[in-house]
Image (cartoon, rainbow, N blue to C red; front, top):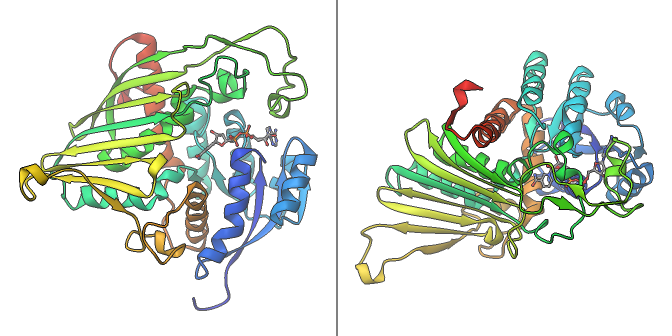
Length: 395
Ligand SMILES: NC(=O)c1ccc[n+]([C@@H]2O[C@H](COP(=O)([O-])OP(=O)(O)OC[C@H]3O[C@@H](n4cnc5c(N)ncnc54)[C@H](O)[C@@H]3O)[C@@H](O)[C@H]2O)c1
């Protein structure tokens, strides 16, 4: 790299599951990608100031705060990373954009399509495209799948199936959480998990034209979380007292049929109550000459079947183990088959964000790109409510 290294001041809001992943990635990206920009870890914000202080100390951020607005206003911060419950994304994004910051926001963008549209419009207005946390698009195996499709290795695409299954709420005794609230989360398994499958569908099979969907809430009420253990106490809504079971407000399972703009048909299923499935973010793409299959639980493998290659009795799916030939694997490891993990995807995502800010990469997926996922989410909800096919053009 010629000239002095660009360095961006980082502010991170949220210290939960994703906050920790972001913090690690902001540390790692400049080390793993030494030719890219650097980071100056400035500040962590959380509604719980002690949690903010702990995360700041642990990951090497200089300061912490219990007030995210002071983080957004801080002149040493160039990038605001938003890793809070979904209903806060819009307010935080708008404030950060108005303060002239770059925004890196977790998915889904917001509980409603209108909110997501407002975020994308605000980003357009200030000329800051935003980056949304669809980290699975960073996977070497997914990139390989996209390349195989683009190169026509499986012929013309005829079908896409996406699954997003986990069991984090399969136990009916798992307490009610912010993810069960419509005002905070928006949809349930659909937005939380299905959004990733939709992001992959858009990447591999192109824009969606219409959907027909069905939803189910198999655990209609959940125990209120015990006092003192409430993540909800920290979500800005004042918390909920422990007490009688609380009605779950969104779906545990979403399934839908899709018709892509290309004319290809497909399916998406999302479930947060699929016992035994830990992160089965899986897809199959079928084509006129072959098929590709992927499962995030085995994220270092891609299965490829090509028709007519060799004797029929020997022909089957072959497993390709990712390696340095499948970028950006080689940034981490020089040898194939040793394997990347989830956090590496976040590191790649952050490296991409920094390169985008330095003008050496195109931001992807921007708020505009992620809005296409939000439209599918919204169409699925409308279709399930009205029992009919819904075209995205209606929204
Ligand atoms: N990209 C992915 O793979 C992925 C995975 C999990 C979650 N997510 C997304 O990340 C976001 C956060 O999810 P999570 O699992 O980390 O949730 P979490 O409940 O583990 O953490 C949320 C954090 O936000 C903090 N917070 C709440 N209100 C706040 C406020 N007003 N000011 C400052 N901090 C506040 C909480 O204290 C907590 O630290 C969600 O949008 C979720 O959909 C993305």
